[in-house]
Amino acid sequence: MKKILTLAVALVMVFALAAPALAAGWDNPVTPDEFENLSLNLTALSVEESSSVWNGSTYNKLDKTYPVVAGMKVHAYAEIKIPAAGDLSEDVRTRIQAGQGEITISISNLTGATLNVRNKDGLVIKKDPISSSKTYPINGADLGTTITVEIWGSAEKSDKDAKITATLGVYNEFDDNNQFRFYAKDGKEYVIVADGKTYTVALNNNTDTGMVFQANSDDQLESARVLLDGVAYTVIDSFGEVRFLKQDGTTATGDELTKVQNMMNQICSAMGFEYAGRAYMNKTLIEKNLGTIVEGSASLVYPSGYVQEIVTSDPGVNPPQTGDSASIAGFVMIAVALVAAAAVTVKKVRA
Image (tube, rainbow, N blue to C red; front, side):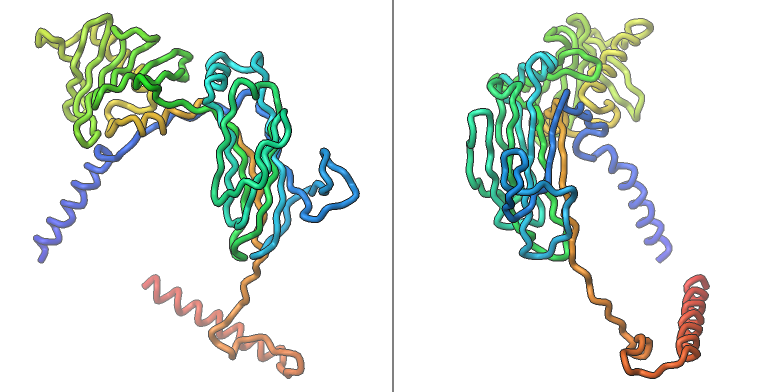
């Protein structure tokens, strides 16, 4: 029996050590920047019309949200100002002009929800149904304009908060040529070219400098090469000790080793992982971890107004109802008994 337990413990330790190496995805996903010069306001509105006018509407602006239970209506207004072309970086501006910008409205614990969307030309979409989220593209014609979204819905459940979130973002994806271009935190441009299970990452569109990653049929990385001025160095990772093998079979040393090591670290840092922590690579993971260029959001939360009834298991400790006669001494006795019971419980647990 002892041998079996020892073996089981050993296996648990082995799997615990192996787990990080088999974990899917990036260890350090690249965090997107907040949207430059973003102006995004989300306002709670009344559900009943009034004679007062706010922002061209006949609904009152509320200072804050209110508690909701199932069936209660909510009404909100999102105002998203798209920065002008001159207020954006070239990277963000050109991506919006290419149709890579999006406005997303997300909701939770709302039912029967609809959206009214307006842009500079007036009402675009009326009573567009939404169950969880809805995305609308923006392009160059929207630069320097304001887009508004009016949200209507009813709380679905009483014991959950209702939430509305508006997000403006610019996102990246592989183009028709299987190329993915992005700017890293170092300010440099990189391009990833996908060719089957081979992913070439070039710096400043220079295919002589960068890295080549090779994945197997399960998308797990099985090899990599560093490219430096047209010379390829195969990465040999032996239990955390990394060496770089040249085509003639020799290993990079001295200044050459430093340059190759720095290039590998630069490429991996730009992509958001350390080579020792690599795991899997495919187009979906690349877009997930590198696809958000900039993003900004705002949220409204309508707290649950549901109050759960307090039920005790022992009717003998219920407070007296109106008309009951109970002395203060009786309550003291009950309190002492409860404290004593708790003390015994604690003692048993600690024993």
